[in-house]
Amino acid sequence: MTLVSICIPTYNGTAFLDECLNSARAQTHRDLEILVVDDCSADDTVTVAQRHAQQDPRITVSRNLRNLGLVGNWNRCIELARGEWVKFFFQDDLLHPRCVELLLAEGINQGRPLVACDREFLFDDSIADDLRGTYLCNRQRINEFLAPGRGASAAQYARHIARLLQPNHVGEPTVTLIHRRAFADFGLFCADLAQLCDVEFWARVAGQAGIAYVPETLATFRVHAGGTSAANRASKVFRADTLDGLLLACRVLDEPVYAELRHHWAEAGLLEGMRRKRTDIANKARMGAAEIGNEPLGAHTVAQEYALFLTQHPQCRVGEFAHFRWRIRYAAYVARQRLAG
Image (cartoon, rainbow, N blue to C red; front, side, top):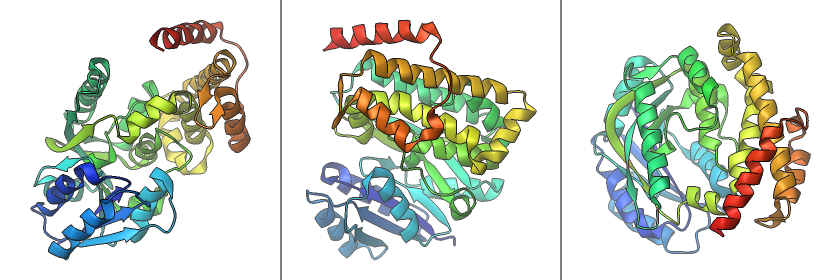
């Protein structure tokens, strides 16, 4: 059988970790290692994981010496994993018992290094109806794109994301199975992105090697107020929505690792349009920093965060300070934020 590493990066995950680990242990594909890699939790996460490890020899618990952050811990999981395939599985989520079995069969059958499946959601009572609708619409869009052909070729995926680069066209890492060669060929997850780290990785891999898809609901993604995505939406709106988008556009248009993706865009006559979109995003970032620059964003104001971002990523200094429509849109954005506050 093929060894699969189920990687569970944890941080203060006591609330749902029992369910998560029981779900991993119940997989019908038995040739597994289950890695719990804890990022210096302050709760009983490690204790819960070690209790499961005493009951199941396939489980290994590792604790980082220092906090690596979300993406740093994902990459640490990859470093520790021994399997031919890596199955990311978040501490809040659930897997159907046949999830690994069916994803693995599809990946082997199609010869793709990235496989994904359909997922459903568990919303807690704090999640507003409009946000629930966003998740459900995203699920529908993914299935409309990937389900008919049980995936997409690299060229198909590249053309598809050229319409809208930022949305997640695959789903959360919990829905994926990734062959080790994807990391060898295309690198690890990008830690510079606050919210779009998985979106960027899917573009890097699927846009150059294609993706296989199982249109069955094999995973459950839990959406709750304590989740990482919720925290990013609450405290990093400008960084997650705008600066991440700019950095993503700059990376895919400039860096050598995306050469094949750009080739697909050029063949379809989309490359120049993508460069114009990058300029639009850069202008949006400038206008946002100008309009809401004094508002707090973590340890900095928005203006300070933008200046720090450009210092760290000088390749994002693109475009002209123009496009009056962004001023109008951001004035409307500020008005909505004030009304909401």
